[in-house]
Length: 133
Image (cartoon, rainbow, N blue to C red):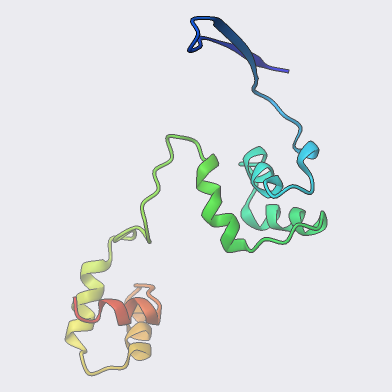
């Protein structure tokens, strides 16, 4: 078991030391409110659906959304999380908006289909949100 010792001087001038445990057995926490979070922390390499299946098997009911909202706490510190989708990830935003501008009277569904015909995959919701860009 990995441990570290911390030492400090208390308010009475007395030196105090304590050992801090840096490892734990997640199974020791089964049935507690924090069990699901510990499973997430111990299995950062697994997908959310896999973690969700495991938790269901052991009788812990949490939503997939709950898991997604808490997973960030256990990510590698170098991970960059930007809110929402990546802007112009495929580099076709400008062309998509140009096509939408040329066909303003088309329905959202028809515009989505037209974009697909030009090799630009965008859902109806994306077209609706960017129709006025």
